[in-house]
Image (cartoon, rainbow, N blue to C red; front, side):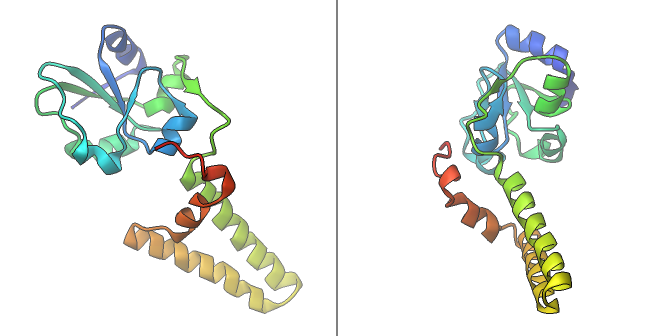
Length: 170
């Protein structure tokens, strides 16, 4: 697949090309390119096949996820491209997006904020109150290692049950 600049992608989009956003539904709900179809990378193998001759432009947040998974994207009968820089490149080029700031921030950012806060809290309490609190930081670190190795994240699952995430887009 060839890469397209945001300006080139905009021209093709205006001519009827399909924009496919491979980010997760929570990322898409918060911000996306108008008219884009959301097909999360985790569900790309279940996606409807593209029409013969159709022009499809795939993108993610920065372009890295799309590049890294290019071989998984359905491109058999279509003319497929990757948007250079993803939606961030699109915005940097001055092109508009549909944004809904009432949607919760992306789950991975929530995990990063929560994990980082717990590590800092554990270190601070270990230093100020009792060294036993360092265990909290170690526990969070071990959980992050497990999440990376296993591909599952208990913290993300737990955060998904929080009230601000209950209205997540399906």
